[in-house]
Image 1 (cartoon, rainbow, N blue to C red):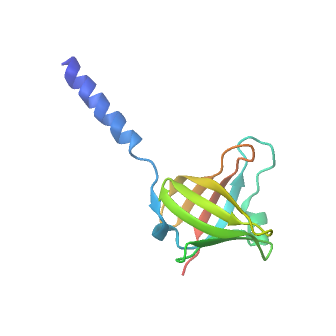
Image 2: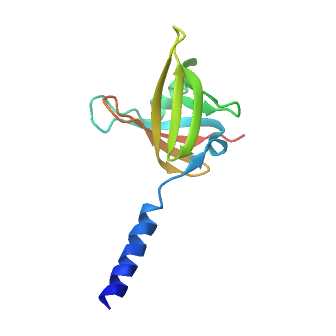
Image 3: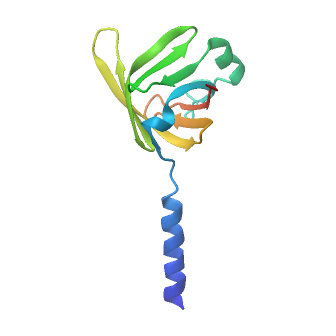
Length: 133
């Protein structure tokens, strides 16, 4: 009986661990409007939907594996991306011709909404909704 309980417990744990969000590049294509930016370490204030809408804050993932982050009517960041599982690898093209690489960790994704975050000293969590085509 103990073995059966342990086996059921083990199966449940494996199932829970396998439920991480997963995406490939195709699932990201399109424009995503930011609706919330949070700073879990509270080193900066969170940014709510009204300000994000006013700024036109968004990220767009294109079929040619490029991305652009818009803010205030201008490209804030652009470059290349790849998606694999629960990560989006970002290779940002900087104005001096160099690149900077970092990862967006996906914590939630559906066809209409995504939440991703950066980790480290400038930790941010972004929630965005897909714009209708």
